[in-house]
View 1 (tube, helix red, strand yellow):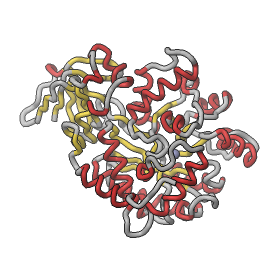
View 2: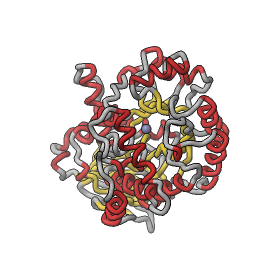
View 3: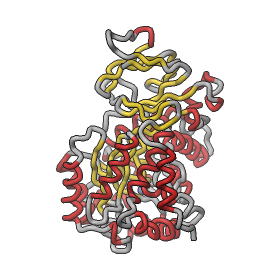
View 4: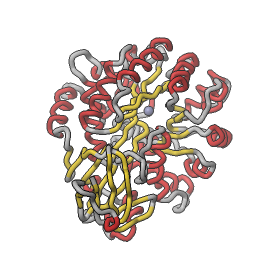
Length: 439
Ligand SMILES: [Zn+2]
């Protein structure tokens, strides 16, 4: 199949009339439209007044939290955690309600409509088994998104019982989950020791060992809130990233999430280690966490990706929105309008995401999976047309996102979900949450 349209952003450059050939879900050719004729029997679809973009990669999310949108807003971090997250987690995992699936279906449907083609769901409502994680994966399949299930390793006794496991059980279940979904090319399972406070050193070791046994990335929340630095000092005698180094685990397979409070030495250490950072500017602002020094990390060569974080710690699920927040937050933190460009933020949300997750996604180049977006050039949020890369990051409305393809298959057509009925998703969400009340 060949897809073509009026404009495109390819390798960060604006081009006229691009065409993409898709074979078996991968990009087989990218060329100007008039240089890529269809072969005999090949379908050619001209989408006209659209601009072609790579699909965006959401490297950090907790899908079930979309169900809690609005329930913990405008609170300090720990109150948000207790009054929204901890209070409603048992409702979501209550037997018979399929709440985990409903939350994931809701989050992923909304993400697809916002141009997310891959989502990494850092999932910790495991209830001592893999059924819940498999329901998240099923929701991604039903919407049509590519998913990385970052299976959590969690054993802090202060958290709800449903989050907790022993290191041995978590490791065994990680391998079982990975094997169960190994045949699905759109599903990847990676381990995710929760954090220095949510996982004991033995648990973190177990998670990282799993990653290294199967050669995959691993995820960990680090230095999100300022108090976590003090906590690491108390428990490890040093700062969060140095604590990971002290455990002997720091390496290029790590995806550090947040990093708001990394000091200069830790930023150097992160760069030297080759690890990636999943940066969540919207969530960091929403919870009042702090400002990660992305400009400095980028200058030092750290691999940076973007995430939306959970739906109740941001209230938005769009990586395009995170690109805007990322650039604006760095500008205001440095009082410098040049601090970070739209093009760089776009890179973080696309190429950076694929790189952080270790998947062949994020750019429109031959050999990558065919995860694509088409936005409507006639939408006023993209006028005038001369500055497409800038407008995509700073002014694009989700209304302009018209087509979304994952692995060459349509997930959104003409602004509507292809595989699920939005009304049916809404009915499920309303039924599950109708008796819940914000305290
Ligand atoms: Zn998180």
